[in-house]
Length: 120
Image (cartoon, rainbow, N blue to C red; front, top):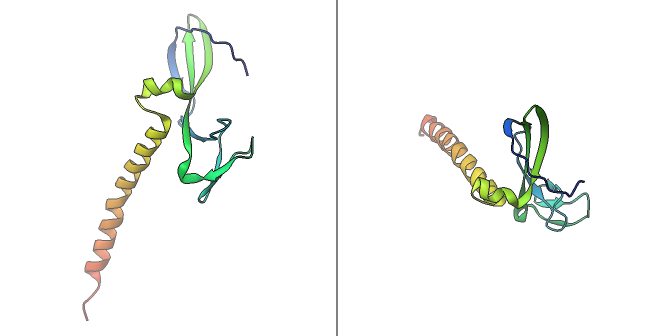
């Protein structure tokens, strides 16, 4: 991996993928595998509870500078200021929002089945 930093003034043309946060290892920051209630890092072998997983940003962009096209990937906490919160914080908000969206459908479905049952 190239560790040199370069300043690039460019126009963003496209987001390369929609998955811009990932669960990460607390030791080596690699993507971890979440299985049931456990997490496992395939790189360093670190294990833990999936509920305690930290998340990191990985934003891949197609950009244009003058007449050149580049695909750049920006990792980590440097994107916290751009999004206004940490990747772990964003993951919690997205998960809570998804749970709220799914909750009324389930509640409505349960209410219908309760009303449809005849009283004996």
